[in-house]
Amino acid sequence: MTQMPTSNLPNRKVRREAKASRLPLRLALDRPKRNPTRSSLSRREAIFGYLFISPWLVKLVVFTIGPMLATFVLSFTHFKLGSPIRFVGLDNFARMLTADPSFWDALKVTVTYAAFAVPGGLVLALLAALLMNQNLFLVKVWRTIYYLPAVVSGVAVSLLWIWIFHPEFGLINTALCFVGIEGPGWLVDPDWALPALILMSFWAIGNAMVINLAGLQSVPTELYESASIDGANSWQKFWRITLPMLSPMLFFNLVMGVINTFQYFTNAFVMTQGGPGRATLFYNLYLFMTAFRYYKFSYAAALAWVMFLIILLITLTIFKSSPYWVYYEATRQQRKKR
Image (cartoon, rainbow, N blue to C red; front, top):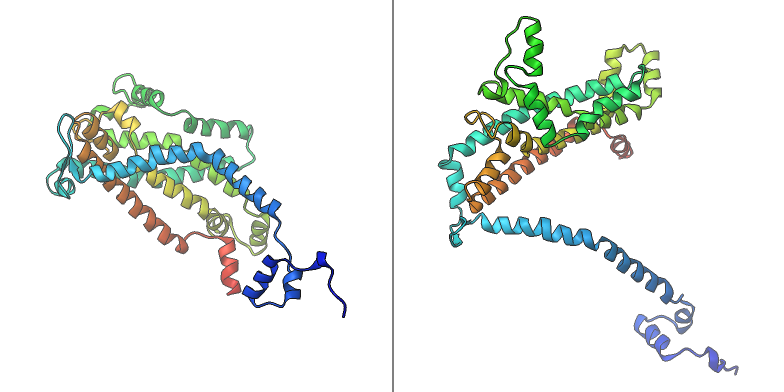
């Protein structure tokens, strides 16, 4: 009887594993062993990865998640600068809905602004992208000029538009005087202040235009050639090919436009301070004034969470409607396979 060499005898660990897994001893010996070097390298890579993103994680926890949780707790309290914190439950939200006319005015102004600024911006950005997609003279220069207003933003832009909308020597009213039209008061007229800010919003369509332009240049030319062979005219090509292929970009611009308009603040704060009257009292501006002018921090926290819920509801509604008007080639191919 031939005996197995001592060096080839299975050790106790292999015998225990074979007994626990109910495998023959020969199969347990032939089973590939784990490479400790590979697992240690993977663990080391994971540790270094977390170390590299640790500044972002700290920022996320300290400056985003932490303040959100703090404002959520604060919204159920009564806290004014110089007074102790007192738990009041849903009183802030009840007061907001039933006893605060400024809340409804701010919401009305913001919704009105969004109803005109977002669709108008989408249409103008699409038209600008269609124009910039043509073989024009110095087209790259024109693309840069159209995009520059999206880069230059903030207080400087607000000051520029204060001069443009000035009722006496502003650029717009001066141009209207040359054609015999008396310009309105714009920012000092309650009937024209909000339309002036809506008109100003169309100046910064550069971001949406660039996204639409990228989408236009990614449309396969074979689709247009096939449509031409079938006798389709320019409008039919635009309606049946361009718009469906561009719908993911329009969807993205729509979502971002809604979010940005509900967070509208800088221009209204610098140019009108919510006036004249309450004509430009945007929701975010009213929230800021409640917190840092009237020092009602708990009520401002409740306002912030209501704004978050409104934006979330509108965004979810847009996402739910996307299968009916947003076209994705990958989704279509998956449906065909099914």
